[in-house]
Length: 194
Ligand code: GDP
Image (cartoon, rainbow, N blue to C red; front, side, top):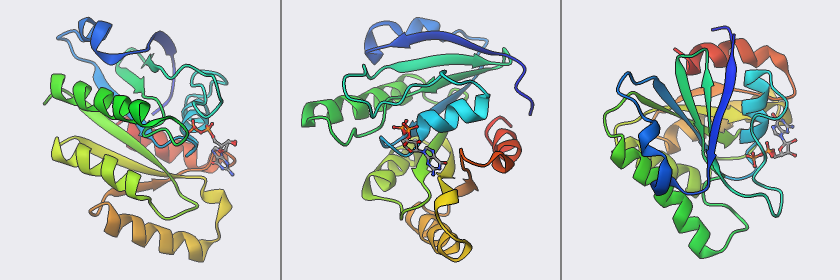
């Protein structure tokens, strides 16, 4: 797939208040970008879309953690959720972030939704990754797992991480990515926007 147009639509601080009216019945395919903080979610979105500042890193202290919505090729509605289970935030924040995703899935149940779960491909999948995947799986959401940062490991390590990821995340469909190497981009676009 070729990216022809990326249009920033809106940011939301909280899920419940304002988001629902956005969802029209001519349903564009919705693609949720999820991942723990610091897995490179913002870097990956920017690299994938060929835009420098479409997504903002949630890891920086003081940045508001918002859900950012942008439209791709007038056909896809992408939702960039805050770093899931934010690693620095307090307990209250963590629960809120989880609730945002759950509320979204509840209210858009069986709509045209796909989730892109970005995990750090240079380490084993964590318990949190497993937990996020479990939630999505429970809701029957089609999940595309992206192992980002694969430039940080050698081939042998990568094979082990892939095997471990597939066993931890119930034979998830996995693709590889690196924001430091453009060779992964074409395949990632094809798999995510299919
Ligand atoms: P987010 O919190 O998930 O949005 O993560 P960021 O996009 O802010 O990235 C966190 C850190 O990982 C930054 O220092 C990025 O430069 C780095 N990073 C992101 N993607 C890659 C990658 O593919 N390879 C490497 N080596 N570093 C990456």
